Length: 172
Image 1 (cartoon, rainbow, N blue to C red):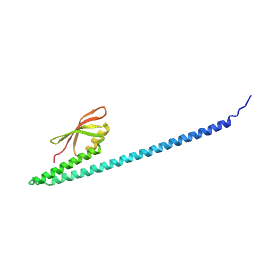
Image 2 (cartoon, helix red, strand yellow):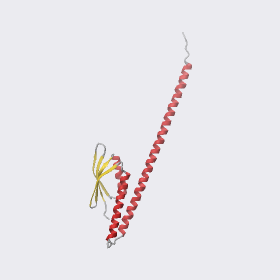
Image 3 (cartoon, rainbow, N blue to C red):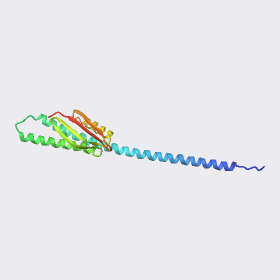
C-alpha cells in the first residue's frame, strides 16, 4: 500500500485560509470604519444646517416680538400716518417670517394657498412625507405665532401628503 503524506499540503491550505480570513476581517473593518466616518460627516452637516436655520428663525422671532412690543407701547392713535407705517412694518416682518419658515422647509413642505378670516389663518399645501409634515408642524407650534393650531385635513396621495390646517392668532 502506498503512503501519501498530505501534511505539508494541509499546512499550506490552513495558512492560506488564515490569511484569507484576516484579509476579509480587515476589509470588513475598513469598510465599516469608512461608512461610519461618512455617516458622521453627513449628520454633522445636517446638524449645522439645522442650527443655522434655527438661529435665523430665532432672529426673526425676536424682530417680530420687538415689533409687537413697540406697537403695544404706542397708544397714540392721533397720528394715523405713523400707525400706518407701523402696520406696514408689521406686515413686512410677518412676510419675512413666513418666508424664512418657508425657506427652512422649502423642499419638504409647499403651501398651495393661504387664507385669512378675522383671526384665523388657513394653510393648504403638500408635504413629501408624514414625517416632514409633523416636523414642520412642530416647528410652527414652537414659534408660538399661533397659540392654537388645528389640523383639519390630511390626505395621503401617491407621492405627497396633502394637508389643511388652521392657526388662530390673537390680534394686536
